[in-house]
Length: 388
Ligand SMILES: C[S@@+](CC[C@H](N)C(=O)[O-])C[C@H]1O[C@@H](n2cnc3c(N)ncnc32)[C@H](O)[C@@H]1O
Image 1 (cartoon, rainbow, N blue to C red):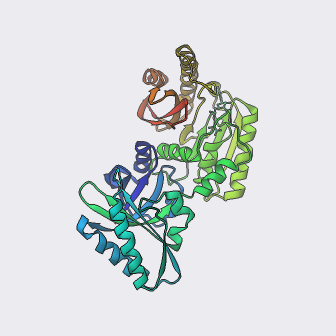
Image 2 (cartoon, protein in one colour):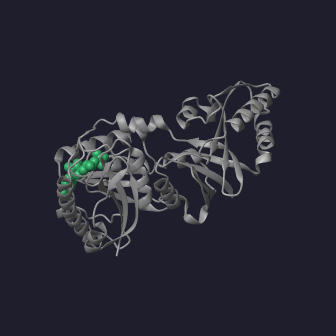
Image 3 (tube, protein in one colour):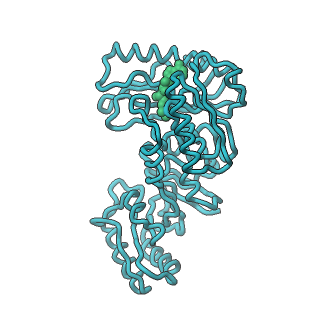
């Protein structure tokens, strides 16, 4: 079984949780600052990468080494893998798990690698600038994986892992789904497709088999769309008929544009999640994945009184819809949802007393992960619930 390093996205704990859910805790070898190393027998890494919202790139480890062996290990790899190549090689080098990546190491390795490639009769272009690490988006845009190699020096807990990138986040595809879907609504929600994928993976655990995902607050349909793309059947409902139509149109567009595997189906209906009945939801749902309602859109930080009012209204809403859905679903149901928080500078006010609310509705909290961005006032905490 081979070793692979997964470079974690911005919210490291959340990204690791996604990997543990998809690849299995038993396969984790070690977790570092930027990466998690797993054993894996996966065959198609770009497919795996495309289904992981929280992984930036996947690196196949070809050598476990000590510091003194790095240069020779890279040399050996290049000689072995580039001997029969022709044309111009795009080459990049990334050092991971160092707070301040070692520029001297990067410089020496770039220079020696260029020399080795030249000795093999190959012209090469370095993507790194100023002997620093290269951004994944630059590696993607320069098509380094297809036209050459991205070598990674990964500082592990005891060893140094050296590997080549085998898959990278397809940023064009994400932005197509995010910005080119037919219906968007800045006021209703801008759930990033990557976060929707992470939430679906957290709900499904090793989510390869086809499930039925239900989003009772579907809005413009980002979660149903991502569910379809991952090959699951999806159901979306919303209190607002316009949103039901938006989800319908976006899902139709997604199926037409991406032709997802497994031939997944979707349906939508108008509904107040607090009053859902078996007639409206007769299916055996595998998981509920929803952003939920986050409260009114804000342009400035709310006063304490405004925060309390929003939390009070949302508590009522969450208690009622969670209770209602509890009665209609099976014992092993998982719910992955977002809770509203408010952020000012570095301080976050989280949703108060949610544990008591969840217990009252018949659930226990398995885990919570914060998902905030620098410029946000309203932030989301991702919560995983199971039935008591
Ligand atoms: C934050 S938005 C969801 C955005 C969505 N994730 C998307 O991809 O566009 C919340 C949605 O919840 C809906 N909503 C609010 N209260 C509801 C309720 N009681 N039952 C069902 N839907 C509700 C709103 O109409 C809105 O579309």
